[in-house]
Image 1 (tube, rainbow over the protein chains, first blue to last red):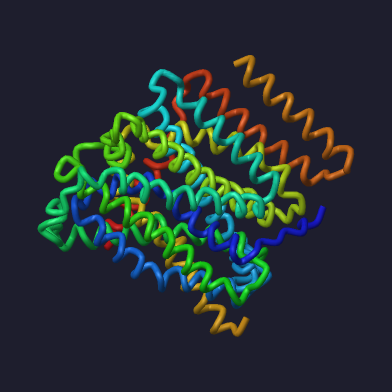
Image 2 (image 1 turned 30 degrees about the horizontal axis):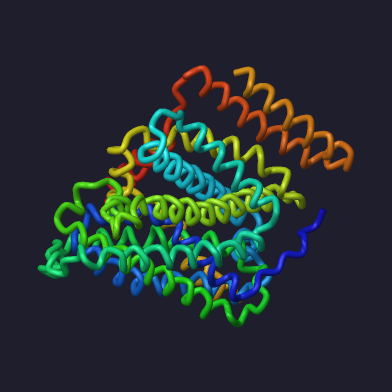
Length: 359
Length: 69
């Protein structure tokens, strides 16, 4: 079976970009603890500094409009080296898939159903995303419109309900965080949510109007920066110094809401936002993993690999990050180092070699 | 354990049947290999055998690489 005809409208692609990056929602809690009340500055800085990085991805997609990332690698580096680098990306995507499955499973286990084995959450989510990938990545792009709009509505709505609980003096003093922590945080914020958008290079060949890819990618990034900014500011002005105590500050912030004894238990919205955001992100990474494996071994029908790769990802998801400390350690010290070769070094090297070889 | 074996057998039969019918031999081999890996890992997990955490290996690798500088 040859590649089926997939077409993603530019407008859907913009929301897919936003939806994908929104999947790093759970990173917010970690970053909140790292940077305290200056997290909102890190969000804005992260957006600004990630622009050149993401524009490098767009440059590759515009230079090779009908090729996905694995095909670009083969074209630029040659067959053998291209396959080797593709194998590295397969492992990268598989690990990202496991990490994100682990994130959503851990979220549900810790906050919602503590007694259920984590494998249940991993399996249910994997099956859901496997179905989405089987139905087609264009369907995931269409669903991302709903998830992103819901993702915009929820922080704005909850912020309005929390106006009476806001104390803007909690934002002071500005830039209290040390230079080292600021740089480390911006590095994490650039590489993890925005740098992982390299995954979308497996999807860009199907975007209908290639000329609109740049503005739709930046548009998607701007949408998500707005969402993250509202969340960062809301959590800081409502929780204040106690923001650093909670593992899930967004969840805790929204638990305070009690308007007229009618609007209560609104934290369910946060759980739904996180679930829908991670659904989009995991589906895209799952698709990228399966597609890149099929490209690696020149298999035309990538859909037959969905279930086997899913089973491997579920097992890995249950094994990674044996403890909260290990996970925290990874986020603070290793995630950036892990992501830099795939999100920064290889894409820039690819652009340079493509120019030198006049490919 | 029985549930895992049943699930994997079902997957193998349902998907494998279509691949054999369409004579997709390469796909069948790759599908089979990946499914065996997934099955093996699942059985190990069910038997509470410690599966190495790839994150720890990556952390050691990063420490070694950054240690060079």
